[in-house]
Image (tube, rainbow over all chains, first blue to last red; front, side, top):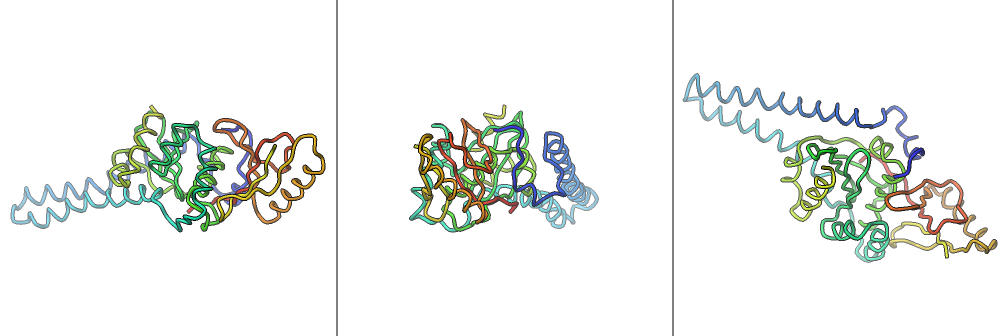
Length: 211
Length: 74
């Protein structure tokens, strides 16, 4: 990725602090703490109720279900950023796929055609770029940050939407992460199980690249 | 042959082509480039593996310049 130039879209979000390694680490920890905060009390309540009165087991089960469902919903939200969205525009997709393929190396091209996600190693980690979102696997492969980000022309064929995001990412990685809306951060396994099955190999490849 | 292309609803459209020594073709390409900037497109030049540069003027020695729409948080 090119150094020393700012993404022009940053002018639209002047209030945002630049996303760098420290920002990612801090937000990763905040998400981790937040997950514990809304999980542990429900688990403690569920276990405590059963210990105090076995008759309260049905209520305890509801508390434990909350402890399971809420993190799942957050992970689902994170994984959803890269789900296919918008018009398929099949008539133009072949042409768009050709251009996107030209921008990718051989392995990344094959991965993108199979999964819909373009793998792009960067300084902040390994990116997976989709039609309207991106995943960032941080170095070490232990955390995924999920971003909602899209082109402002939603009628484009899917591969052109990926190419838009890929080019912006290559222009200015930090600017790209700053412009994008952060949706979720968590362990890769939490995101992986909520990804469509055909996209999971891409996350595996990104984790491999990030290690 | 260098190309100026725009990503659009057709996949992409070739707006202009030029060679380094062809001033007329380059001037035509420059006018197209500036016209696209006025329409809100952003000029991007892929300039190596995993690298691209935002360009405000059409580089004569580029192989490919792509006009793209701005991105935004979803």
